[in-house]
Image (tube, rainbow, N blue to C red; front, side, top):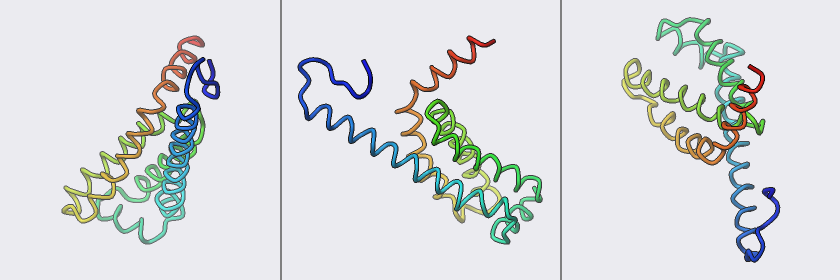
Length: 144
């Protein structure tokens, strides 16, 4: 049975509700992808001063900044690809957990709430799209 067909005897409201949930989840994914690509990765990848200074303070330099920016951009793109969306949400969650720790230890918790706030919708996407992770794993194991 596909996602667009309802089981026999299902109330139309169930189908409409399921569709609304899928649309809302997709909207969350698009918003997350836009945030990570434009607001987070882009300043790092173009070496904007707002990104350069914190990485210099941490002692990570431009290599760390470009690496994190590239990972964020890759995660943003993968959030939009059906087969990779759950894995992308998990990977970005890992980055946000690391960002939280860095904010607490290096910057005395100055912006520590931001990564925690982003963890909530990322966890939601990872949980809701976990079937895609199983499908990806099946495909990887089939080719190995």
